[in-house]
Length: 605
Figure 1 (cartoon, rainbow, N blue to C red):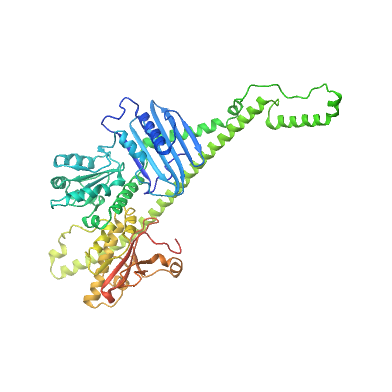
Figure 2: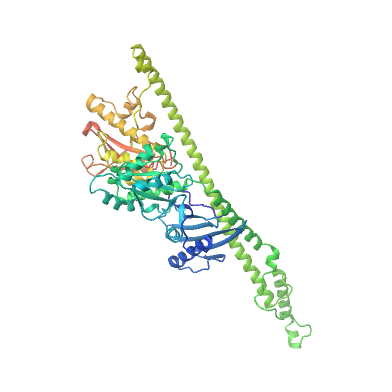
């Protein structure tokens, strides 16, 4: 079973594209033939492998395997093209499935979960064939959008057939900013080629685009990601399509932004199941692979193995013997006995060169079939392992979601009780408008991602808070925070820590942060159950060094200090991000956040 066994993570390159409306490079050729030719050219030029892509091929070497299979079914032509390569960092797998219906599915992955940069195979396919994602054309450079092209961009974003992401950068009228912004955009979006498309709105187009999209618009000098199935009628859906703010784009290196957007695009692709057509075609090839192995193992196939040479005269012991030969009778008898054993063990009637070669050919056929059967079983086992991992991850995700939901319901019940109590007090004070009126809800303008939270701290947007950690770790975990739960909780945690610091500095509050959270009426943003004052002794003994995070030398002359107090931001499988901090409010008036990233290892994880 040649499934997408290692393409489920956020590191694999996985895309599903269709033949565009424009003219193909070889308009008179079959689409599948075009794809096969590109695959063969890529193998020849990049890998030094020569083959005829129009034939079925199964070539195996110690460190790589190439397979090309064609299938005809229900009047359609299908292609499977596969290269497996061993490397010091694991096995790389590049697989194409293509159909004469005009679609291609490409998956490039690594057995060790290594990040797959935009593969040369994808670049060659996109450069040679006119491929698109719904209405979205795919180019290796951002597309500049003029005012008269805004409606086309809106149609692309709203297209129900789109699978990949749309990245839209907005521009303002500030002098001298557009050119450097446009220069950086290709470096920011270089890892999304084939997985999505980047667009740059000129200033006039940015204004018009925002008029068309409303809450789904893009801010000036920011970069917004649009997922499929945009619903402009649902204001809540706008939260799903997050952006990188101007501050974040300025703070992060172009490479860090590129890794973030590239990982986001790969995680999005990995989160979606294969298209029904892809599943159907994959199963056609899987069934045929099984049938080939079974056919090769049938007894009648083994009996039909060709002899390597023409049959020669049988080797026999003559009945008439000379005296000399009679003296050697014992040897001849032993020879006859051995020939009889050969005939019996090998299952042949006569011992001739032809019969021995035929037997050897049959054995070789069996060995070849055994190799193919072993490969098939290993592939099936790998797929089973992946499905088991997916099932465990889904079960863990369900448990995490249920825990989060239970906590949210508990917080909601507390807030409802507090709301009723406040309304009753207002009614007793004859403030009937306050007690029974409909409150005006402010627009939520909190950061949309963990990286934005970190950059807000770095830009002194939150009083008494300093971020001094490795933002690359924050970039890493933001990809897993697909709906922004961790970012919302991190922002609430930072605001609550800031309020705590203000209480210490301005009100003379003498307790610690954990006590502050547990005091009635002190915090409604962050549940005390999310806060941990330390780690277990076993964890610190084994993995305490993983909690040594950067701080200014004014805090610790070494430039690092151990942080054990932390806030549990979310339950997201193995990532489960954490925010680690050290409270120095009573010393220098600040709280230092040294880490926002994946859960560091513990004694039980």
